[in-house]
Length: 126
Image (cartoon, one colour):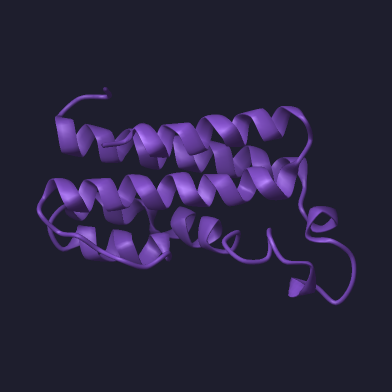
């Protein structure tokens, strides 16, 4: 269930190594989104949408402990659109507006969210 989330995260780490910060940030958002949707599916709730924090809010109705990730999820949500579109900023490419620090933090957040979603769904880290 979480293989796709882990695949997105692995791809983000590959992009991080090649200094492609904006795309790494985007893939971390995707990884977290997929992981939270996987956890929702595990409790019989299928959900559409892309806002990780909204997905966590819904999951939090059943598993309150996930609400600790809301602020982190809001950060990742900011990477959904501007990381991919040149017109998200007044000038310059999307690539030019993201930093190594942002990508590193996004990877750390996605790792924590995926780990918690797996733990909740399987009762373990794996």
